[in-house]
Image (cartoon, rainbow over all chains, first blue to last red):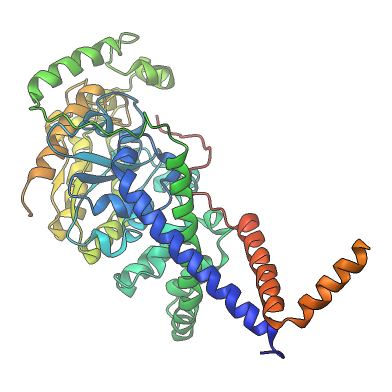
Length: 406
Length: 54
């Protein structure tokens, strides 16, 4: 002992640190459990790239995880699901894991980051046709991807014990195309490169990187717990208050009210475009192109979009993780696209392709095609959900939550 | 006088093995805590970006 004070001290320091980490993790877990329903009812994009609170949410019997994009986030309205269901009128609220610009590849990573907790649990994957109809040169917008990319979620996918090598390889090949997102993640980049390669040596190197990757994940998960606890601690007690008021929802009546509100919010133009978005597409709408003249380019764009490949990866991840998903698209906004020269028949190619990709997995899909000629279902060209649209979306969430397993 | 007292105190401390180990442990823990404070905080929020949806 006398000759080795540094060894003894370093062992004591390491042991104390490990104990502190374990105690903090237990504390964070209990804290997250206490406040997960509060977080569900408030805007929490600040912690959306973590996974701790999402994993806690999916374990709750009265929360439904919704992973989506701008169709969920763009319009701030009381009809947004996390606000609409905040008083648990039918016994649940949604836990929103959505952000503007999200695409299927980042969604796949979010699902993978849920780990074993997603097994057997209902989860909604929400998307809009804009992700393929308005993709720049058929590819996911790189800025959108980078903004939604999370090193934690990326690493959870790469080192997931629940995913096949084939799925990881497909994801790795796609993730490597967005090099900007990997600048600050050298180990993840290394693992992705090795995964994407067909060489046996690279496979060995991928497995060799696993212990280091798992160790890094331990640290990032700790950071995630800290960020989550810190986020909650900075909310007021009023914000964190959860009220439960059971109530029967008269969906048709709510939809009628929402439609009248939507009509008021489109009074700047005759095309039912929400006032919030009108300026952006005013020129396009006021200079219509003969219907049908853009059909070929539209169909080529839709069918060739890379997003389908990413959606397939997301579906693989959902299946291999054992989740019980529902894929919920939004409808085309037919009359607006007709002004861009695309006929309704050509627009239907979106639904056809959507089902071609999803149906082989046996995963239920809602496309809301029956609403695509309703000018007030969507608020703009990108089919972002309007106030009225939200009522139908919420009704579908409600039915899915209360349905028995597929 | 104070210097002498402090010198005697630290000499006694150095002579006591357990006290030495305790102080070195505290020193190591301080280093670990410093590293955690400097590099430990992660960012799980979305950075500002221009959403280009129409």
